[in-house]
Image (spheres, helix red, strand yellow):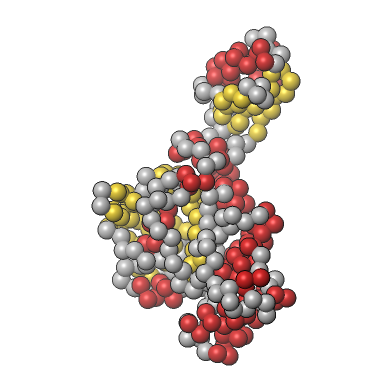
Length: 333
């Protein structure tokens, strides 16, 4: 029987999975409340895709337990699959069919009946802004439109839980915004979303909670703001070229952390977990004889949180892909 609505819609405890000598999951724990977006972030080989494959019944764990929509992913696979949608990063629609024909085809695949498939296709096309292009061949769609069509194809049977595996990879900013709006609309209507993404701004804007995965375990969880607050305030100073080294020494002494130096911009930056104030920084630099052009304190970005937690930057998109795993195939897309 499914869990009560107060229980997590996605739950994992102690998940382990090994491929030969590679430990993809090493005791992963996860809990996603109903009607929320959880961003699953992690560097190269962290185990994100393996976790998604286990949660969507595409791979059996070696140990641990997991439930989706209240059903056990190993003992109740049919029930789990009936209650989920899965959309990967590559559109899985037939470009020789129109948008409307694609959705009706998915409806027939799920045996919901011809009439119901037609009604559901029209409902989704209207809801997600594709009705004007409904009778155009999918091959004429833009990248963003194709991705939206792929996304709504996974919603033919209105799943309560949706897994999105890097849904906006390679899209332009406008198309990404369209996908974000579509995801928000789903969540507003009660859908629970587990999102893996290589864009941390995407997780920052969409996710109610974030789980950072590294070496097969969840190493940090919280809201974006909670994770940012955990690493403290970001101090940025712009100084004359002659003052760069001294400014770095001053900031290191004030914060106890090693500053980052950008000599081209003449900027010294450091994260401070303590109660460092702007006047405090200004006075310390002035006392050291450092001529400043700008001094600012701000919240750290999610990228900086990611770097602090994993020791790896996010600028290289390849570093956010799970090389030990293959992309999961969707139940409806």
